[in-house]
Length: 219
Image 1: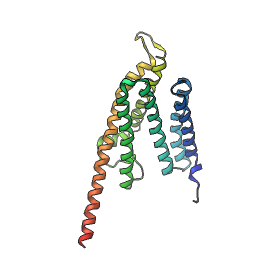
Image 2: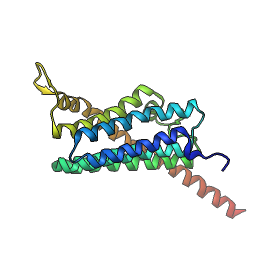
Image 3: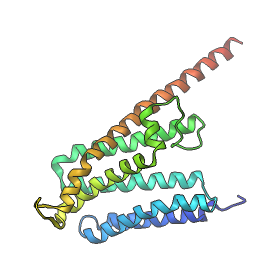
Image 4: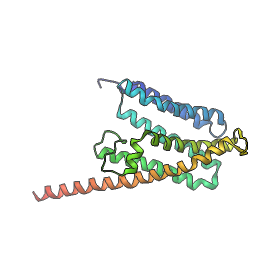
């Protein structure tokens, strides 16, 4: 290789995120302060790797995949711990994990098969909801941040309610979880939509390839 993309600045930030995520996962069952601090710092660095990639002209497919996998796996590990803390809701945590992983995986696979340069590239002919989701930064940020916020607050509530809100009489962490809960539901629904639309796109590719193969046999 002419360039060693593994030591690009955005990817080094990505490795740091992974280390922080691992530390967070290790302490999640017992030390919520350390776990939360590392989790938040890892998420905070996620903002900077994209800026670094564009500023230094070091955007890579490896970096994009590293970022995606770190996000998905970190959230999945948090949900595993929540399943342990709240066993009565384990099915819903499992469903959330399945939708998140499967939805993003098949969407990324369909993106590659279609020859697109990014999984965030949505052309005008595709679903308007997905187009809004990926082209509006406020919408994308709200969905992703709100989803993470809900599960993070559920985690914190297991240990502490947080500062008590005057007049309401509810802890800050519990209140934040209640507010962000609808966003988490919508985010899971979007993951399900990912699966449906990506499956449809793959089916279109299959039909086109089969048609091409039949024409080749006739010739």
